Image (cartoon, rainbow, N blue to C red; front, side):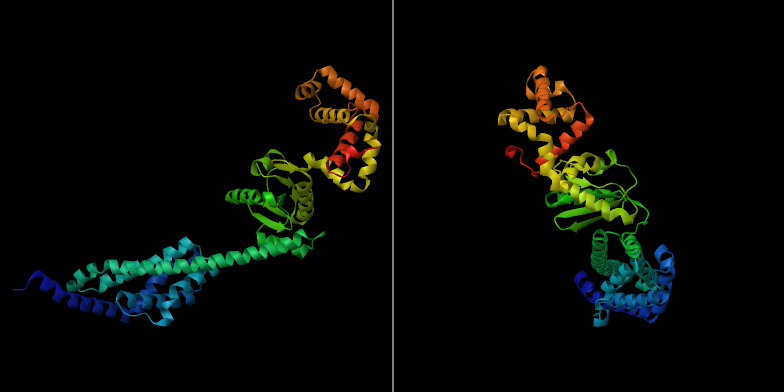
Length: 399
């Protein structure tokens, strides 16, 4: 009598032979596999739209089933088929086939293979067919992973190439005083935006660059087209925009110290808005985004650099008659009053009586001839103080 172990040992070679015979019969009729696969894969939308030409589908399917049948039969794969999965993945990435649809197509290989094996299996081969189901599945899944890896590598490469192209084009656009219409069209194509769309433009210094990139990621997550461009010491964010200024801008750039240019109406106006955003970023130190309306004083003071000394002298020279300590108190009172417009608020912040505040304001007027209750006087005083704050003139050195 034979023991169970002897029976198993003697049946294993027989199972391998029956499996090899079944797979061999299928290989002899592999054209049917290709036809069945191509018919099914064309029902997947990207393939139905012709992203992969019919001749390429047939060729790749023929090579794929040659590769898979060799592997499930336990045979060596020739060198010409060794990198097939990665090559197909890279090809589909270049053709723009979405990864999910590609994987759906590849996993049809198992269904087609298994259906064909089942149809060709004789009754006495059904047991060996069932015993090999895990092998067939594992081979197809491994092949699928090879295709996925090739796709992802190529997709990453293409993304880097596209980003490099966008960066070069946007850099050229931002460096243009009057952008050429052809350049504007090329940038619009690279960013996939309408040339006449509105854009949010913001700029941040090196220390705030990471925050600006996080804001860009948030905008992109909301399906907005967004690009961050390094420009020397600043990074510039350009994003398709449908909101207004003020609260909508602060919401998306919350916590990012940056300058915000006016909304760019059309891609051709982005360079000017970017230059203004960069200028604002250079003259302000706010904890969040600063728009033009909130930056006009430091902007104006910076642009008056050539005449800053004359401005400060003509507006504030009278303060030289006050002792340094008194002058500091007067200037602090003026700054807080200009900020709040409230004598009470100034008194509370300065820990003094409101009459003291009034006396200081009168003293400032007596020394400078400028009355902060007069809007024109208040504006020129604030501008002179902004010029001094920018370091353009040292108030402590006034004669």
